[in-house]
Image 1 (cartoon, rainbow, N blue to C red):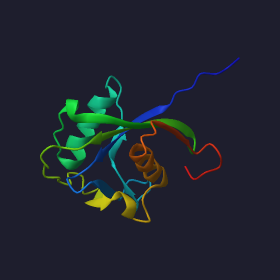
Image 2: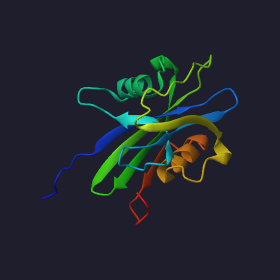
Image 3: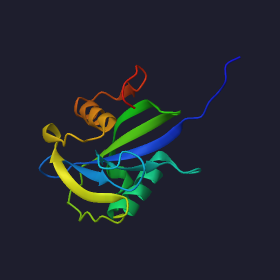
Image 4: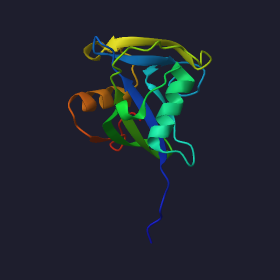
Length: 151
């Protein structure tokens, strides 16, 4: 008998500025990948759609009010991570007018900064780096952590 399992859903914002740079945040004091660069992101709460979760996280973490109709689907990642499976959905936002980005969670985020896609920091979270590449190449789906890769 097959056992059904639950996956943990999370959403990620790939915000692109007018210079085609990606907004990254440097994690701190979270207990997960501290000192590494990631994206504005978070878990989807019960009763929330993926888009609603992303809009909430963008407001909470970076003070961004994003019109939902300006989001574009980037890619979906099915990730095997430590003791759980995760489904990560990446959305792309290229705002027509660049909003001010504010670090509203300085206890969890050391810095918010834009980077060129081909000049990401060495300590960018590996699956985030791969998701950015997938979105740039318009590959809508990838898997990570299933072949003894770092997860």
